[in-house]
Amino acid sequence: MSDDHTDPRLLAGNRRPMAGYQATHFLWTVEQGVATITLNRPERKNPLTFDSYAELRDLFHRLKWADDVKAVVVAGAGGNFSSGGDVHDIIGPLVRLKAPELLMFTRMTGELVKTMRACPQPIVAAVDGVCAGAGAIVAMASDLRLGTARSKTAFLFNRVGLAGCDMGACAILPRIVGQGRASELLYTGRSLGGEEGERWGFFNRLCEPEALLADAQALAAQLTQGPSFANGITKTMLHQEWAMTIEQAIEAEAQAQALCMLTQDFTRAYEAFVARRQPVFEGN
Image 1 (cartoon, rainbow, N blue to C red):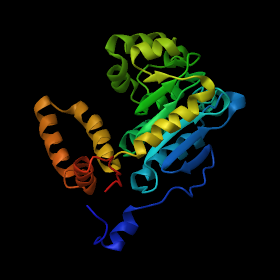
Image 2: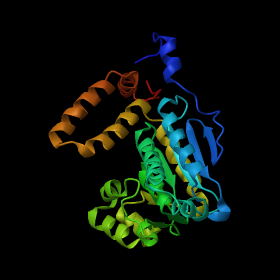
Image 3: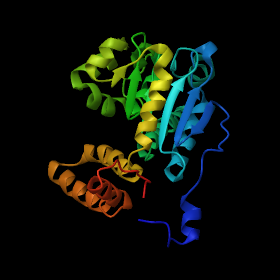
């Protein structure tokens, strides 16, 4: 799957570098294939606004075509991940809206989760401190989650008079922690502590707070050294197979794996094995 003989017009329409992207409502950096999104309103524990929801949605959508971003880290500034939707900038205005505008909002927030799941890059959430409401959803929608002992994750929608079925929570959270545990979190809105979250499988592991971001970026960097095309296929299949029977999933995986066997990375791995050296993957 080399680009050597690919029509440059095709590449121009499907390869969009993102290292130079200028974020407006959060921080964005790219270093050696790892993009870091930092929610940056620490004085309010990094709440989301109408603007940041929309920009995050559009950014993750654009990552489908990014050829210089192989993994993404999402973090919060100032010792907290995110307190969720801003009470003054979002909750207050929502109580005055009518149904069409409310549906516009809920579809926009849901679209953020869709674009996070649809982008091919693995997403690592670095969760410290408060991780509540929509912040908990962003962590949930990530592929991997690193936490701290002091992290507090709460799907607190019922505490503000809403259902727990927000932004895909009733579909995704049970697949991470199990139906019973997800039900408890969504019915009660209670906080899930860091150590409990690791036991439940919500967090892949816990880190020291001062090392959390570096550990998340190191994990993301490790992922960038793998076969990025194949990793994107893995992410796609993990998501799509939720709605498949076992028979359908096995056939879909057969087709996906055959496609990966056509990549040069597959050949590189074989040649490296024969030569008794580590393969260097290039994502093609």
